[in-house]
Length: 328
Image 1: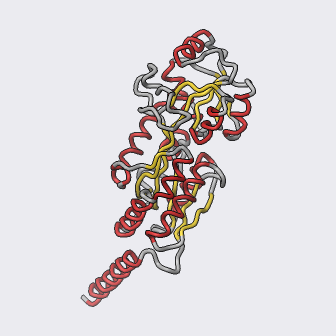
Image 2: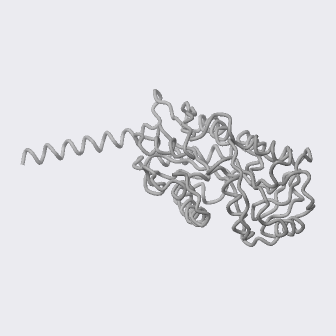
Image 3: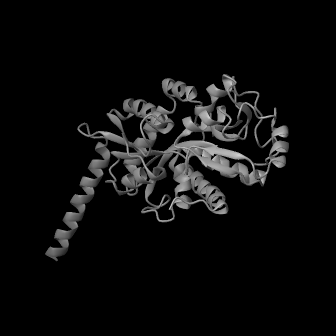
C-alpha cells in the first residue's frame, strides 16, 4: 500500500512539474532555436531569420536560427526529431519535408509521426523559363518546340531534391516527354548556364528568377501556381494549368515543426505566436520582397498543416517513384 502511495505521489509530482513547465514556456533564461536544414544565405534561411525576428515579440523571448545543412534537409530534420520536446528546438523546412520520404528510402525518422505540426508560414511560386535564344515566344510555341526536339532537350536544376528538380520532374511528367536533366550545385550556376545557352529550360522559384525575367536575360513562359501572380514583372504570365497542363500546381512552401511529444500547451503558445508573426506588416513586406505569399488560410493551424503535408507526400512520392530518382 505504501509502495503504491509512493508511486502515486511521484507520478503526481511529475505531472505537476510537467504542467508547470508548459505554463512557464518560454522560460526567460532559455533561447528558442529554429533549425534550418540548409546553408546560411539561401531562401529558406532568409525566411527563418525573418520569422525569428517576427516571433520574438509575441513569444517575449530570444529566437535564434541554427543552420544544420545536408542530405536534402534530412540531417537538420533528424536533429529536431531527436531533440528534447520542450518547445525550445523547432524546425523550419520547405517542400523537402514532403519529398524526403520518397527521395530517402532509409530515413531515421518519420515525417508524419515524429513531429508536431505548428502551422504553415508561406508559399513561393515558381516560373518556367528558357535560354534567351529559345525560338518559342509563348507556351504554345514552346510545347511545339519540345515535341519537335524530343531527346535533345536539356532541363537544368539546382541539385537532387531542390525545388527546381522537383518542378522539372513534374513538368516532364505533365508533358509526357523525358528530358536530359542537368544538376548544378545551386541555382546561381544553373541560371548562368541558362543565360549562356548551355541548357534549354529551368523551372525555379520566383525568388531566383524574377530579376532575370525583369532584365530580359531569359525567356519566361508560365507560372506554376493555380492562379496568375500579381507581381508586376510576372502578372502577364499565364499559369501552366490554363496553358493546357491541367491541375499543374507547384509552390515551394515553408512550415514550422516541433519534436513529437512537445506539450499541447507549448504547441499552442508557439502557434499563437506564429499567427501574430504572420500578420506582422514588416514580416509580410519582407516575404513579398522574396516573391513569397504569407499563408492566411486554415493551414496556419497544426492539423490542417499536417493534412496538407500528407497530401504533398502522396503527390511527390508518385512523381519521384515514376522518375526512379532517389538520393540513397
